[in-house]
Length: 293
Length: 346
Image (cartoon, rainbow over all chains, first blue to last red; front, top):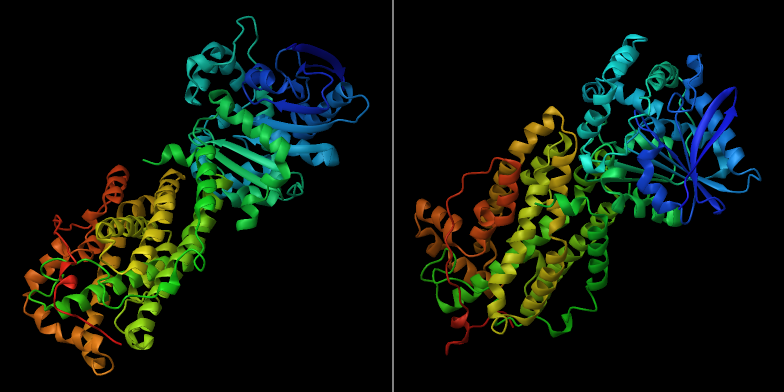
């Protein structure tokens, strides 16, 4: 398996992504969360690159993906435009269908990207993540989420949060992984030379701004088969209810599994086949919950 | 207890496959044509004939038969009730914690099978009426009815308020119905063959799907609890036990309506003749008998007999109703095959 690190100057900023399984007929786009990097998907890259063209972009402000000055570059719309540019480069003939898999903040972007991709989107897979709208309405209806999301609020304070996160960056990542249910063995490889993605914190601020407006103007319902995978003991996000997700996805399957926030790293032997089966049988799998209720 | 299975889609998919593969057809796979042998016991009884000490051979046979019909009707009613409470007690819970499509499909199968079982037991009771010449509407007066009962109202209200007493009751019923078959299976050659067959078929499917109620109790525990959920998780089992036990006792008292219809059929006449035997027991002795040692009845009404449910309650730290410790009593049908001829109906 060859994993290539690709760079391009997109929309005036340097952008980086990992690519494997080039030449395979379908793209699977993995979007990581905060404070991860695409290496968090290592088990998925290994598994899927045999059959899929795997693309894992670095989030803005992570490694060589430049953050830019403007907060607007961290908005979900702007990130989606960057991702569309990446897709143009990896599939210049625009012939490949795309499966989007998003985790954490990457999941929020995946929900938005799904509305932009239209018929090019083959499946949407969300792992322990909510869209910006879903999170906003959850904070309104489930007060307990405020307690689980306590860490977001300091992130919303400019400069101060960057300073503190920068100061404790070495301890922060292992602490977050441990809290999220990962044992040291399952930690993604942390390169000591790799700079901690402090600038990516601005994503939280951009998303918080969007959240306020999203309550007034909810996104359209996605028609593509959507699979939501959730580790039941996520300390950051409460497990979803069908009522929270159903208004945003027409053909929805939710699977709650035993695990934490990084369920795909914790038990890739369960999650990978679920994703693969869903990609193959998306239509028939989806709607199982819908038929019943 | 069932957490691992709950989150194991493969194990659940395997269970779906097994349930579908071995599901039986109510019409084709139960030999209804053989009819009911009206001279046979339905349930083996103890030396005190449940709560009628000193009953004659004829009375013992009638008690065994009536008890069999009551057990059938109790299970049929409770299993039928499950479908009525499906929305509040099942759909709503799975919407609030959507574990996966397999659990939904298993639920669909569960409700389908419960409905079928209910029909099978009611059908047996009809067959009994046919072979004995008893008017169904007369027999129904002596049998339990859940619809319109305080029990059903209480369980529905509990569900509407967000409680889950329903699943504690279902878990207990599932467990009891398997235990009842265990008690009667050693006598399979001596009891009515059709009665045995219906209970065997029922037990087969129950043992394949009996974990569903426990899985639902796990779902309820696993979902993010609200304050009311925490309250209900402590009180629901005791509440379910209180209402189901009171319902069964109230419904059992219907047997005394036999004296009002004793002229309609000799079966009712024999049953009515048992009343003085029952009344000979003092209230304390009677309560002890029903809760502690009466076969089948103590199994149904005494929560301490429901071992798996007790284990689950212990695990979930749920309160239980303080029932006395049950004792087992030996049962028999040998009297039915003595020299004395005992007949009912035609």
